[in-house]
Amino acid sequence: MPRLLSSLGIVGVALVRALINPILPGFNPDPSILSVGSNYFIATSTFEYFPGVPIYHSTNLVDWELIGHGLTRPLQLSLLGTPSDAGVWAPTLRFHRGVYYLVCTTRYVYTPEFRLFPRSFYVSTEDISSGEWSDPVYFDFLGYDADLFWDTNGDVYATWTGINNAVDKIYGIYQSKIDLLTGDSLTGDKLIFNGTLPNDSTSRPEGPHVYLINGTYYLMIAEGGTGVHHQATIQRGPSPSGPWENNPSNPIIYNGADLSLAVQSTGHAGFMQAADGTWWGSCLGTVPQSGNFSYQQLGRQTFLFPVTWEEGWPVINEGRPLSLHMGGILEDKSPLSSYTNGFTSASLDNSFYFVRNPYKAFHSLTARPGYLRLKANGYALGDRDSAAIITRKQTSYEETFETILEFFPTTNLMEAGLSVFYGDMMHNDIGITGDAVGSGKRYIVTRTLVPAQQIGPWGLTFSNNTATTTNHYELKTTDQPVRLKVIATSTEYILGHAEGRWESFEYLETFSSVYMTVPPTGAFFFKGASFALCNTGNGRSSSSPADFGYWKQIPSN
Ligand SMILES: *[C@@H]1O[C@H](CO)[C@@H](O)[C@H](O)[C@H]1NC(C)=O
Ligand SMILES: *[C@@H]1O[C@H](CO)[C@@H](O)[C@H](O)[C@H]1NC(C)=O
Ligand SMILES: *[C@@H]1O[C@H](CO)[C@@H](O)[C@H](O)[C@H]1NC(C)=O
Ligand SMILES: *[C@@H]1O[C@H](CO)[C@@H](O)[C@H](O)[C@H]1NC(C)=O
Ligand SMILES: *[C@@H]1O[C@H](CO)[C@@H](O)[C@H](O)[C@H]1NC(C)=O
Image (cartoon, rainbow, N blue to C red):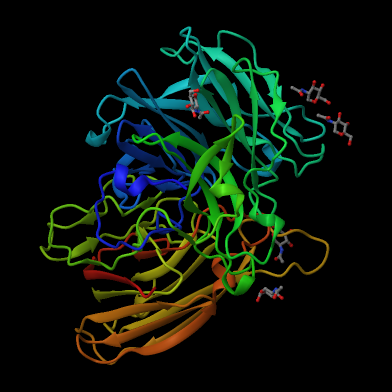
């Protein structure tokens, strides 16, 4: 049994010990874990959100702080026009001789008919707490989930997920030696592993990580696709390229073997050694609500687990499946906390995201002190472009989100409010709009989206794969602020409003969390739900700013 607590210096009297998962609240897929002395880091995927790749830091594996992002400048990450769930995939975070390396892939083109594979790259920094990373250095190969490995003789290897051939869609783990300075390949793309699963299109060997431990090379990968059959397997061999000896205990992570477990879709793992010599790993997992995969609106989250070694193979959580509560280790402390922002500081903290890059700043905390002011542009939330929207991850299945809005639209196209937001094809909104004649009259507008039904043999396209229901409710006042609220339960969201500062809430719409989980035809579900504030001109530019007075996000468990 690992005894990390004492050795990490947490000297509690009668602390209840338990590792509480997921350790990073909100969607945080594809975690890459790294130790540098007694500092621990995790980087995760962000898809079409900007900035890209959050970096979390901890010194005790219990308290994790978001210290910044790896991709903060348009030169590193330019997402304009990027489809939902393309964008930044699966980082690898590494440290070598005083330098941190963040390896990433950005999928700019992700329409199935093009079948284009992306280029991977890395950015680097000597000071990870500065949040300033270098310009990208691109690799030559086509592929994603790239990993960097430094051999003892100075050779640097990139290892990634590539396509075997254009016929059978069996992916493979590829590798080449690279020139680290330029990113250029020094050798050809070499197929080093096909994975452990039978040859079919669901085998999906992905997410490779190469390690050298006690003179033996290890190759850890994800397999089975990122859904119910997701798993982690490990090989070992005499070189970074194999040949590989299969771990007889594979898969070493596979909660999908028992579909009654609370945690599912576990995989995409990596590990590290802590300062006290103990080993730990991270992977992604989901927590389907009511045991139903149609209700996992928080998406893929980051799980931590202890690792021990037996006969030169890593054993995950003593061979038991991963769970939400692992007794006997670390500290029984929820990673969740309430978040209130009165918008009194001059800049937004790290926990907020734009959807794709803003063309220019559309938010201000100084234009009207004490308020977050959003200036609308012509794009709406359903557009594959850069609407005036600011998101923050939903952190718990049961949570409330509330804001207060001052907004005085002069047309029926101007609309500002809040959204339960996933991406341009999955969002459900409540806001304020005006009327067509500009009388000053205001309405609450709600908009809920469901996947469109295919009728007949013709296909649905990205432009008609959702069906929207829009409702209007006339407001009594033309000059009062309006409070807007979402109550999230494990299987539903409830949208409400209150006119003025003190009135009680009236709840107008309830929609199923299925519509924040199950994507419409042709779309994907790789992220998870966020809450958002937005202001749109719905196709026209707009002169009416939206002033939000606070952001209150309260998880209830
Ligand atoms: C992967 O599978 C292909 C096709 O069966 C085979 O030619 C190749 O040798 C395999 N590669 C490895 C590294 O196992
Ligand atoms: C996988 O199976 C298909 C036939 O279903 C075959 O054409 C292909 O060569 C196989 N690929 C590998 C990598 O074994
Ligand atoms: C590495 O080797 C040392 C010395 O034999 C041993 O104590 C340690 O447990 C080994 N570590 C791993 C991860 O196998
Ligand atoms: C899961 O939820 C969906 C959507 O409500 C429903 O259609 C399906 O029957 C449920 N599945 C199970 C196994 O209960
Ligand atoms: C969706 O759009 C495509 C392309 O315009 C069209 O062929 C199809 O009929 C549309 N489907 C529906 C259900 O409207």
